[in-house]
Image (cartoon, rainbow, N blue to C red; front, top):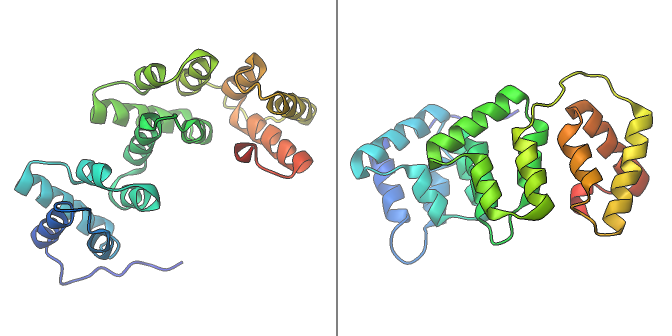
Length: 218
């Protein structure tokens, strides 16, 4: 795996000033953002954030959050934030979309351990002064609200046992609900928010084996 070699001639204050200029004016100078943040190591980026905060009394990541979008926005979060902060910001971006990108919330809730999810929720509260559950509830409705709030709230069983017969059965239930476009069906909610991660992954893998695509692609 390639290792990023730190650019020895960098100055946190100078980099902060260049990033400030890149974020002002008509449009964002994305090339400058990439040339700086994409060529500094984690410690250098931390020093840049500190310098930016000291110079402009503003969080650099929050500024970039308003200026960027798409893959570059996600890359900036990965460059600058620890995993819990990164997932908190990605969740907030997903929630604020005109139509909540529920797949991001499902990915965060279903792939993290309870301890990691708790760290994300703590980071979310600290960054936005609101709970993740509160924002989800205010931006969604009906069974989708119940599903997403349940996903980030529930304490799942964490055992490693997998019931393949159950996985086959529940993959079929998911397929039927999707064919009928009943995405808020109570069985979908029950399966996704109550099954352990290994059991849920077995169900999703069975779905993919049977139907040739990931459930998130339908």
